[in-house]
Length: 127
Image 1: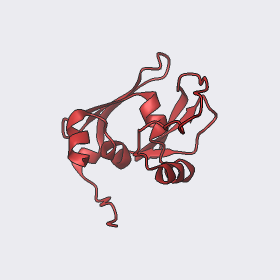
Image 2: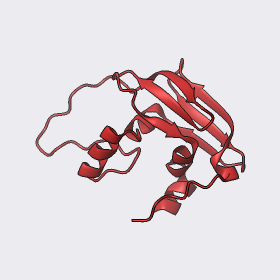
Image 3: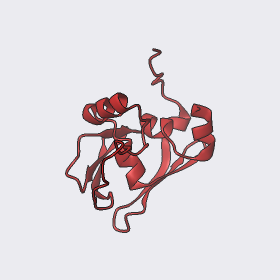
Image 4: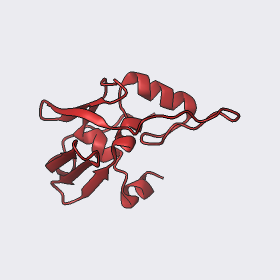
């Protein structure tokens, strides 16, 4: 498996970041290269880059941002809508969210956020 190239690039740095904590609408990033990304909080929670979440996604064959699938025969349980309770900068390279399910281990680097951008063009490029 090839290792990701973390070489700084202008596309990996945000020009502006807007996090809609109070409305729960998610987050928008305008990148320095002009690209715009919009992330729902549900997508970001399902894309959590922490080791625990990454391990669980790997075991179930999910991609970052893809919701968990129900095991055949199980009944869906009610879960409150995913919401970020808080967001904070981690140095100049990342964000960290605290979620309403009490999870707060993931550090979302700018590189990672650009890599998992859910827009149609980026999603096609990953396929």
